[in-house]
Length: 169
Image 1 (tube, rainbow, N blue to C red):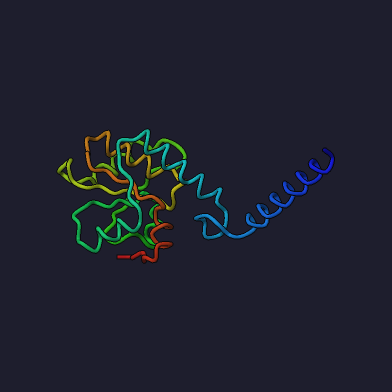
Image 2: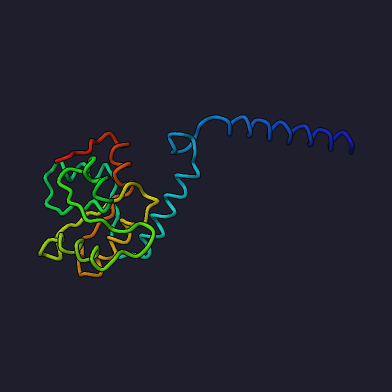
């Protein structure tokens, strides 16, 4: 009985050791190996999407739309100083607060940039996924009756990380 127990302990120790050695290799989807950040970003997007009445789009899909000349209104909701440093092609700017409700003036300025047709495509983005500004903006657009509202997952950072450039035009 004692030999069986010792053999079992050795076998489990070996399995655990091999498992831990395997964990040392970089795995997952985070370029820097910090899978927790990717997981948290995914959670934020899923939770926001579930609450909202909007769709999500990633940098690759957005690039396809830009390259195809898709007619859409793209709104950068970052502070104007960030927008002026570089933004997605064709984007206009209306700042929406990230951590708190936006002012009536900010929401009005944002809504003034909306197309006249509520069935037009509207894409909103922030710096990156964990910021709530683009979620808020998408909700404001949906509340105003727009039916094709998209939130760019990853925002400006995700756009650049996907190999795309920001413009200053």
